[in-house]
Length: 173
Image (tube, rainbow, N blue to C red):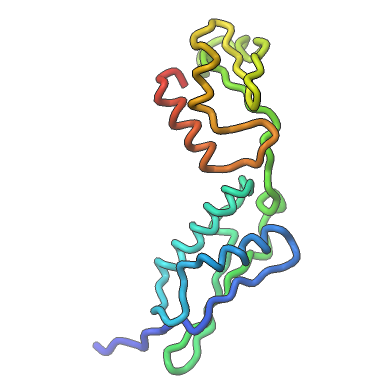
């Protein structure tokens, strides 16, 4: 068995159009995992797409997925390959805009099987989020350590994940 030519990256280009998401993707190229001179690696390309997805989700692009990116390879004689990373043409508009948190309301006693009247409770404004806890299960002040989502702020996946993890650790969410 004779192995074929092993390709090295000659260049990595982040192509951008005029929309904000494209500009964010092009900026992501400055921290790319894909470097000219390295061997072509499908795993590394997949990882780079996931890195861009995470970066965009931290900038408010709630619906953006790694699958919205296409990586085209232009191979040349001598084992050289140029990569071109860009958005696919059929990306939904919802994936190309950053989202802001309108209101953040926590319902500590809520469960799918319980009465939905809890959602009718008047929430207490905690400055950046609200608590609707008619059974007064918790002192509202304890949530300052757990809630990283804030009203009228850009959606950030990291803040969302951290808030969920901390609230789940309380044992009632």
